[in-house]
Image 1 (tube, rainbow, N blue to C red):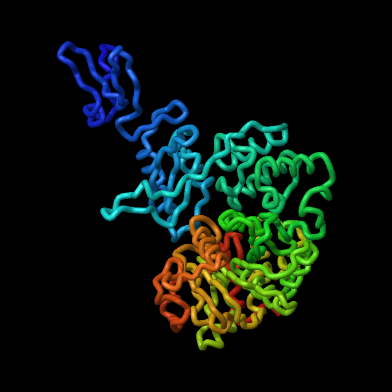
Image 2: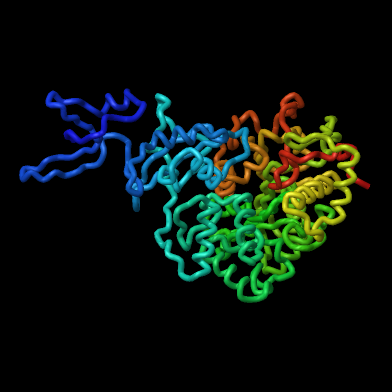
Length: 542
């Protein structure tokens, strides 16, 4: 483009100016736009795209490398690459490798952080979290090997005022410009923080719902129907598909299907909807149900033993018509719940073809039985409680499940409750097939598991935090392993996820390997900032 009426160059960037601006002898200036084209025989100019990586998004030219640089500048990101996707309309897709030493970020959190650095049109609407980027033999990112970006719904026009209301709040919470009616809140990057913000926004509209309501109806149209009924009728019309007494305990994440059902159990203070990402990754045809502790979201006295909680969960499954064999998955304390439910199912004559335990912290008596000392503090970043703090914790525990604590206090109360029932529990050995996934924060001796799992077992080490194991990208690796087992795939030469073959459970435990790791025996309730009960190692409160 040559004219006397062009800009002089890029402000404060002489190198960029020299690269694309040229001065002509007659005083005019030429600008190299980067567009490609051809002039046909009849003089028609046909544009053929760009000669560089710049793409046009919503009418603006965007250089993906600038977005990559912004992503890599975030503390929670280890690596990133951004590519254009032209499947429907041109959109930016970011492939992100989270820093495994940090709390796993959600897509919504990443988009919010990018908005502080980039204009709106440069923020990728689609972010895919990966454990690592595929690379060529020369170490360059192999863009052809990147997984296909998930398709976005084009049906974005709300059907009524309730869908419009929900769409407005979802877009604000998730950092999106558009949301399809059939799109899933959790698939779009919603996490526990996003859920809390959404529920607060709806409460400001005089609509009181829980995370379990969203977990049971995660699509925009489905959740809008829940909001509509809550606004128009009594709360008895909403909730757990007719099981009013179980609202706030069980969340159906995927219904229908003729294959083995999968039952998931959340940890201390962990909401059931956190298993949504796992449900999305499991093979089709498997119904998925998730449980959380009684009293977490709706009033009810929590169970003060692992066995009591397991019996309650089994009664709920009976009432919901779930009989027969099932796959059981538990995160943190939920792993002990899953183990106890497995024993109860077997006592009824039902098979448990697979037990999966995600970063479960074992009771301290197993360490003593193995001849090891029990660390006084077993929580990431925790410090001991003073005598006053200990008594305050004990008093709060008396109100667990029925006193209307603020959400942060409630989560901590259930976390402390989980600590105590963990130490009191005496798990019975399980000789059935099991898969155990342990994170870098888990300081338990790996040989302790020999006392709990005596049958065929796979042990997998993941280089992430305690709470990150149930989020992308790590939950994708967990789902891959579960799917392989469910399909009866025999992979005798494959190593466990994330570690070499020699790191299987069969080797002796190494105390020296545990000194820098600190686990969180609770669920997804912000354990990294909590204070541990120093008396826990000596035994639970009496």
